[in-house]
Length: 113
Length: 109
Image (cartoon, rainbow over all chains, first blue to last red; front, side, top):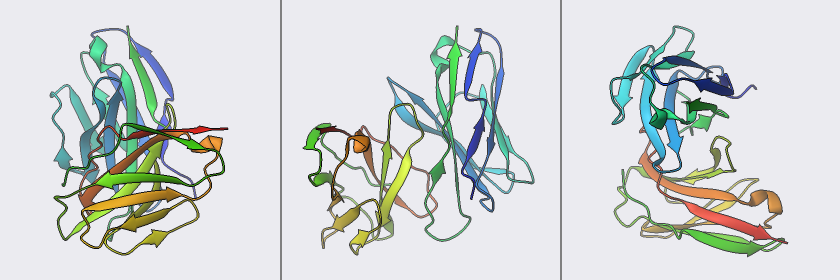
């Protein structure tokens, strides 16, 4: 079955702009989470959504937001981009119950110039 | 979630077994041990997970000590494509993943 799909794969934006990243989870997975990876901070949890509700949030400023749609697809938005937002943004999904593991997408590489 | 400690790097000869240690001395009874790896600029790839019994799948084996304070991931026959950063994560089911620095494994010919 298809894995976690993230679009776009690469993105270049200018400081001050806003950006929206998209994620389609594995079919049947209702939980979607987002992570940011930078060389300095490593992999950090942004937030998790389940059934269109944010269930958990990491320690990021309010410029980072997300949402989940009824079909479990998710988007994350970053407003007023800063140079430090340049990172690999990873989306992951997991089964709703049990000890099923998290599956990651290939990520979106965002460069802020 | 319990904190994990892994060596920052290790080398392994191609064709040999790679044994990756992980310490998690504060693990709780309901926390699982998960292993992921990340090849440069790709998303982390799930390898294996376990609660207290040893586990094996097509990729690797996971050995968890009886007191659950440490574990070892075994790649039975390392190939050059196994060169990656390997993350050991301890968490309760459903909780978010907290990544540490991982172990950078270099498989050498």
